[in-house]
Length: 334
Image: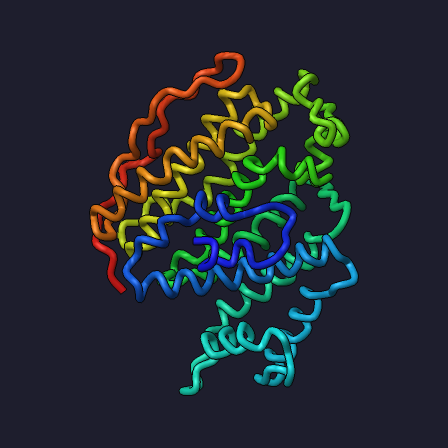
């Protein structure tokens, strides 16, 4: 998984190997031809993300900036700069979306361009998101864009997938709140923090849970704000004509969102406690889920398994995790 997705090829803000398994371990159980197409897209996404994180850690490296400029050159001329250290990736991108028979995948190229522009905009030191609207724009232009890069996506579902990517990014931000805070990063918008009387420094110093306003803020975040984002994903969440790989992604993701939500609430929104428990639960679940996929020879997972009840410090109870929808069972094919 790590080598295929490129999680540990670069020094990064965090070791993302387990995150990649949390998000996309299901890809390893696809048929080889289908798997290769998914892995290729994921590697492209992870590649530029790692370059941007390198630039954050070492501002003088300009790795992402160089790649972005060379990509813009490919768009204009169709040629990869001679001597580029990114030749392999740039050639793969060009040959995937500009075919020799003259066909060009303009929609996917625009999605890739949006993703790169969002990486440039949001991978910056001391980032502060001002308003709820700006936060939603970040969610969509980052993850909404790269969800539209994935293979086997029918044209009618592109708008809904754009919103689905935003939901996925929302849950990743929630899951990584503690880790990001430790790095001096907080994606919660100022408008939200100010409305509820929570200070950004409280998030960084891990004292936010001592502020009663923080709990009210999180209840609004999950119970009021999130459902409004989710509404626009309904076309794809209820679709019954998706490629089997998209069906598996949908069901795997919905289970993952449910896991994040349940554990975060069980921890009473304590993001430090959540981080300690969540990854332990993921490690418990992954072998079971992957074994099910393997045993079924690439068939979408059935109802997620009941795990042993887990007790957190302070005797908070985490209910056994279940998928949030009836899972489809269709064989995977190219």
